[in-house]
Amino acid sequence: MKARRIFGDFEPYGWEPSNEQIAKEFGLKTDRILRFDTNTSPYIPSSLLQELKKGLEDLPVNRYPDTSYSILRRKLASYNKCNPDNIMVSNGADESLDIIVKTFVDENREVILSVPTYSYYPVLVRLMAGKVKQVKRNKDFSDNFAAIKNAIGKNTCMVMLCSPNNPTGNLVNPEGLRSLLETSCAVMIDEAYYEFSGKSLAHLTKSYDNLVIVRTFSKAFSLAGLRVGYTLASEKTTSLLNMVRPPNSVGVISLRLAEIALDNTKLVRENVSRILGERNRCTAELSKIRGIRVIPTNANFMLIRFGKYTGSEVYKKLAKRGLVVRDVSKLPALKHCVRFSVGKPEEDDVLLKTIREIAKG
Image 1 (cartoon, rainbow, N blue to C red):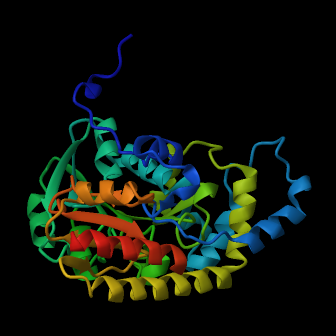
Image 2 (image 1 turned 45 degrees about the horizontal axis):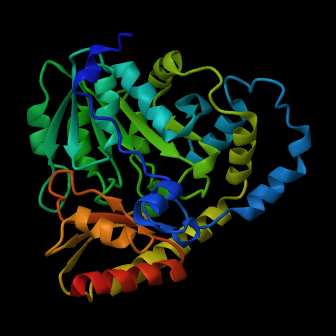
Image 3 (image 1 turned 90 degrees about the vertical axis):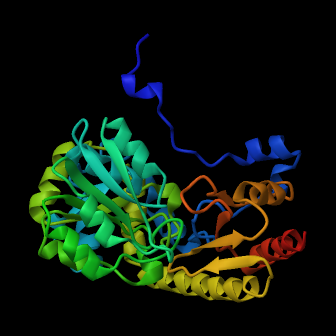
């Protein structure tokens, strides 16, 4: 059997291990494990599920969904104050990213990444036989737009950015972005954590065909298991993306629950407020611990740097106690860092207490 040549030196995305895998590796019971590694909401949207339940028996699961996802697109257009033709619906934000890369990346063409950033981006580019060019962020983790623009050459087809950036939590500067949009490159902005920052660059899609914004229901909407995402772009660019999009990748149950969620955005705002309040509390508590630096964030997760331990060492020390964070130590400039998502106060208290113990050595 012959696989594609790219797999000779291919580095896959590092999936989060399951609770069963963690329990086996560290000799734990699965009910002792607390997850802080996926950047999802700690709150189950029970009221939305109750609303879904009312009409569940009448959902036409025997049929394919409306391929255009027209009802959801209309509701998303209202939420985002745009036209439905500016929206493409996908099976999670990751499918949006996959479609974007398939649309703009040819074999051996270059894609610029502002690193460190979401580690799935280079995987997608390499799967299309594209080339990744990394540009290091500034010391404060802001995008180095001067270096990015200088790195753009004749072979560059796209720049991929994240705002707030995963895992550093900083925002893309609008003026810096405009300087890139004046080039011929496609520019993707991943706004998966938009609702936590309240800052978007989507309005620029009205002026620039080469800008695509990616959003998701997985984070602030508390619907990561739903697998629904979407893009915002000009009508011309959305038409291009739809040429690549699979026809029926989002199921009717997922579509209906996403529609219900958009009818109940007050719940989203309430949960975001709770999470941000808890994030601020965690920041204050961690800032008191000697040997730890808290990186400022605009998202629902936090990046912390240890003075005497690597991120990998901290990950293992926490995992042995049933606390799972994200080890980001292999990413550029993050050797001594771990990232964790904000949970419920009682969960965060356990994590904070254990981090204090680890920092004391």
